[in-house]
Length: 135
Image (cartoon, rainbow, N blue to C red; front, side):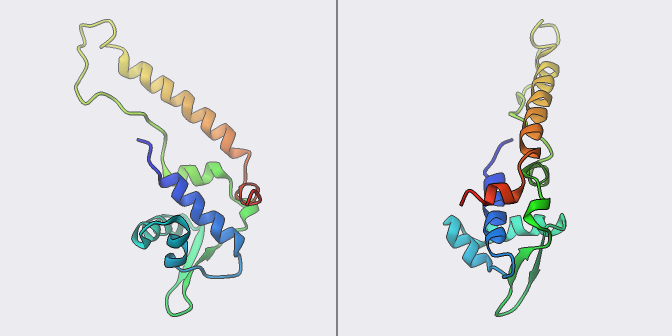
């Protein structure tokens, strides 16, 4: 399902790309988003797991990019955030005797596959640096 995770992740990475030589605290990042630092740290954890950022603890600690923003595509960020986009399926199992019910989930899967291909195609042409340069 769609959520704000992609927007949060892009916000974090855009801030980090603006300060490439600095470690930014989760409090600083959270202040930019008007969000609780715990939510920021959760997304930073995912970025660390994907080797996009590194963090250090302590008084001058924080997070910074491990890779150049010119080497990170928005598609890669999207795929770190979501496996795929899905708008969901009915919680109830459709009626297999109904001409629509027996085919609805397969047709929704095909629709979602097309959406994901379109998203991937569009986002793969944009780097984090390209996006960051808008600010």
